[in-house]
Image (cartoon, rainbow, N blue to C red; front, top):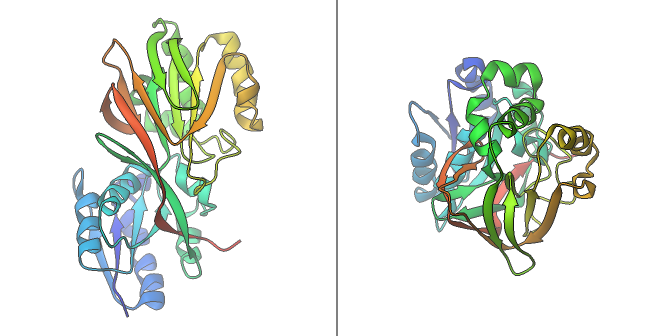
Length: 295
């Protein structure tokens, strides 16, 4: 039987990675036979491990950790000629990809789901500095997300980002942005640009209800105002999937989009720092096979 690799971030999930690893190894051994278990110790370890698994022709790579660990793993698989199936065991505070795939939020349930999970094509995004599996954020939230503590995320959930964004709004003017795509051109002021691959962004599972993990599209949102009154309108819309109907939001779908600004704005990719503008983002349709739980 072909080997699989289990990549564990021991610091994720209140440092419970090591506790859940034996159960995950047992389940994977039962399904695949040979399991190569690796624990990350520093940034980019997951990328190096995943790349090694691809080079060795492994059948699957399963990542146990938060969205950052998953992003690193995807980065390691993305450019390989042979790309193993990609599985996830969520241990983060948001776990957007898990939400989009229907993977249980409880790690033990997610491990059990791997017993029968089936490979399903999944899009990933590419840009100059790397890859993303879920979302790119540019502007206020990209800056504010670094200010959100683990305690705040635990207490407020996805609202922690909205709260921090509204606080930052008081201190910032909108950014001058140029957004160029075949379907839409925008040159003006906005506080935030979101480029989403899945329906779940920042823990809001209805952020983009039309998005599928393999629709071959980038779902782009421009937030032209983020004041207190806008937040009152945006909050319920984020839950009901009606963000497109709000006054302060412009949205469109594309396969490739270029974003530029006179300012050196930071880019946040899947919750981590992803460089600065200008950058071009594109979708790689059905680039990976992800292990999706049976419904």
